[in-house]
Image (cartoon, rainbow, N blue to C red; front, side, top):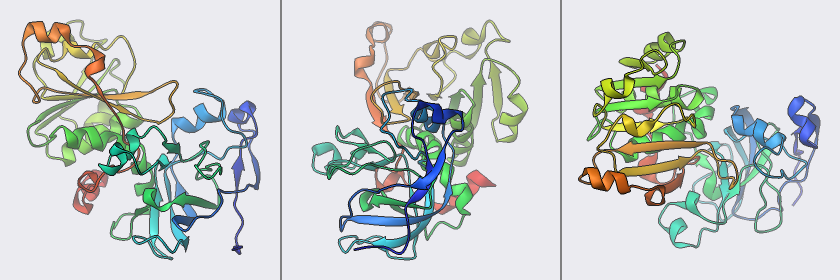
Length: 334
C-alpha cells in the first residue's frame, strides 16, 4: 500500500556528518507490517546519543542514518493489528523501537533487557528494515513501542525530552521508592539527565533532594529546579565524611572517577545500572543505589561486586506502573 507522504529527513551519510554535514533527502522505512504505526513528526528532542551515533562513536553506525529518539507526533497510518492507537492520536516514541516480544523478559514487561532490542535509529528490524529516527517528517515504528499521549495535557515540546532523558531518571527513582521508602535522595551529576533527576525526585515527594557535582557553578540552577541542597565535591575535600550515611537513595548519571559514590553511603548493597542507551559498546550509565533492599554488614559490603547489578535500559516506559501520572508530569514542569 503506497502512501501520499514521503519519508524525508536530515540524513547522515558518514562519520563526517557529526560536523553538521547532514543532507536533507528521502529514505526507505522498514517494510510495512500490520503491527506498525506511521507517525507524522511534530517534535523531537536532542540527545547526546545523536552525536555519538553520527560519528560511529559507540559502534559502526548503519549509514545512511537519521538520528533523534525523543519523538512526538500524530499517527497517520495504523496497522489493523494495532489496538491502542488510532489515526489522529498524538503519540510518542523513545530510544527503543522493537524487541522480540517473545522471551521471558519481554513477556514480563522488561523488553529493554531483550537481547534482540532495536534502537529507534541505526537498528535493524527482524524483517530486514532499518530504523530511522525523529529528525524527519515521518517515522515508521512497531506499535508496541508507540506510546499514546492524548491524555497527557502538556505541550509536545515538553513531553519529547521525557521519552529518553526523562524516563531514564524516572525509572530508577520510582523503582527504588523515591518519596516513599527513600526520602533523602542524592542526584550525582546535574547535566541533562541530572536535571530531570532533581525535578523528578521532588515531584515524587522526596523530603530532601541534593544535587551533587564536582564544581559549584551549577548550584543556583539546581536549587531553582527544586533541590534542597547542592554538594560541590571539589570545594569540600571532606565531602565523603560530611555526607556519609546521609542518603536513602543515590542516582548517579556520571562516569567520573572523581566522584566515589560508595563513600556517600556505606550501607548500600542494592545496585541497579540503568543503561541510557541500548548500544552494546560504549555505555553512559545511570546508577541507582538504594539502602532499603537488604541488611548490610561491613564484610558483605566489601564483597559486593558489579556482577550483582541488574542491568535495565529505560528509554521507554517499561510497564504501566512506570508511567508517570499527568499530575506528576505537570508538577515536574511547573
